Length: 175
Image 1 (spheres, helix red, strand yellow):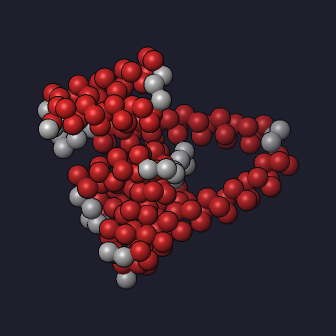
Image 2 (cartoon, rainbow, N blue to C red):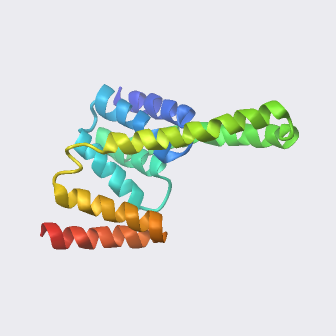
């Protein structure tokens, strides 16, 4: 039963996850933490952090990890990963065919123009969902967040370097 639920949840996430993995985070959190309670909010936050640091898209990485955690075996990881990828695979096949034929159509162009701000809004919603008491434990956490935000925004520091610097800062501050 858990495998079927996992497949259906991640198929739904794959179908409605416009904008990539970050835009999917609020939907993933709702399904995995709030509705099915496969993970706690703290575990979900840890999954997001791990999924950001590992190679590959965050939506697929989190599906693999959550599938494994929810079922306790590799089949859950495979099912969740397949389910979240399958709709995109089919959609890209269909869209690439039709987009090549209708890309100059004013209605198609208008629809894609409307999808851009929605994607930014979903990413902002995901960021706000992750900003809670469990993630910002004390002023030190807020300082790490503020420094990472400022350095990334102002100096365009590479994300890998920022991850390493935040990890080192965490070691020195919390150890």
